Length: 124
Image 1 (tube, one colour):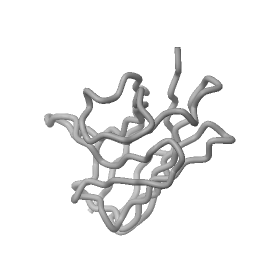
Image 2 (tube, one colour):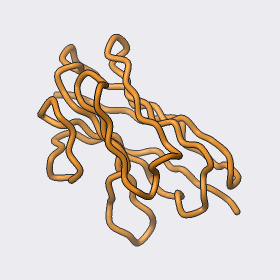
Image 3 (cartoon, rainbow, N blue to C red):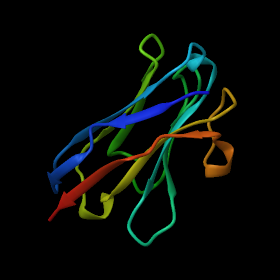
Image 4 (cartoon, helix red, strand yellow):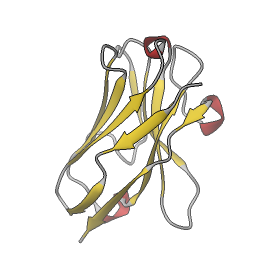
């Protein structure tokens, strides 16, 4: 069973940047699309970004589009989320997720494995 471990979260001032990483176990990482979701306190988990199996296609929520970049390194079994121009409303736990398909999806039910999350806090 795949294990996903996120890292890179922390406390940053508004306007700053963070790079989240998600390391996946297993030898078939490149067969699957990957996604990042986030959940703020008291709110539902929401889609942030996704990337297909090869990295040739990416999708973003409107809330992060233009400020975040998702990428992957299949040789390292790792997916990244570079976040720039961070805002206080970006404060949330960020989760990495794996889709059982090669193409990415926007909904949590399309993903079958999840990490435990990494906290991102943006101060104003």
